[in-house]
Image (cartoon, rainbow, N blue to C red; front, side, top):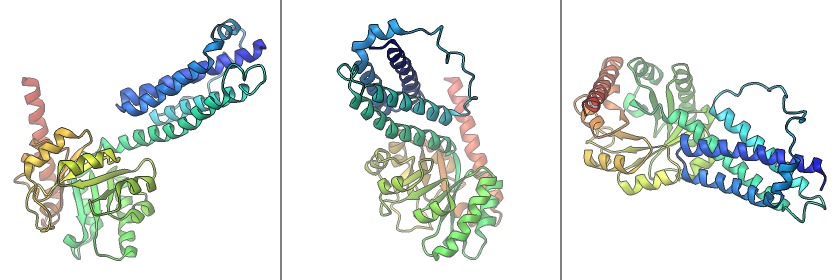
Length: 358
């Protein structure tokens, strides 16, 4: 077997191993995803096993000092974790393709299996997409905290939705959901576009309730669905990989199922009786606590939350509080939102102090 060929194999094995180790560590330590970490580790071990019979020959052929590519200029720094994941995945995929082609040579194909490199390459294409999806969504998920205002068009009536949303954002809301069960799609699309622009400028998450087509049309940050809406698996498949999905749940079974199917957050409710949806089942604070203890994604409390009980909701462990009437029905929407935000902040400050005391 030519020494030059062995050097190519050795270089690409190193490239593949280094790239896979980086991706595996991202899956393990950044995302805490045991499944993805295991898949990446399996690919790495598969490559090692496939070339193991060449081990001594590869090391013997290595000549790093005379490698003309050793001091090649860098193509530039990668910016952000998603860029690093893409760069390392490409590095591994290219290395696998090189080994796949070399393994077809007559003096090599009796030792290593070309098809195993091909399978590993196609497996990595899927894993790369999953990694990027989780990383990009994580950047939005971390913002799911505090005041989550649902701009319900039926509650607003004739009032301007964009102005109402702007007032809540000035008051401190950082998540806006547009909900409209009855308007024509053309009208809803126009409002959604304006709200998307507002939220983008103010760095506020913008979520569309129910309507996948509207969410796609305006490139909303995410979609929120209920138990009777489009199946979560279908919504996840149709949405771009960087978009988040929230799912309503009234019990632990529904919450666990939604998390397993790929939901990024769970809205639990109704916590209290609510005037906007009298058909909602009231589940209470205990149900909120139960769900929070059992799932690993953010929990949003919804239903009947007001200035008088929001502290109780946050004490129970909610990451965010979704509110409609207690803000939109107030004469001064901005002031109502700010009062809610201040109560949430006060509760969090108290939690930090308690933690220090312990």
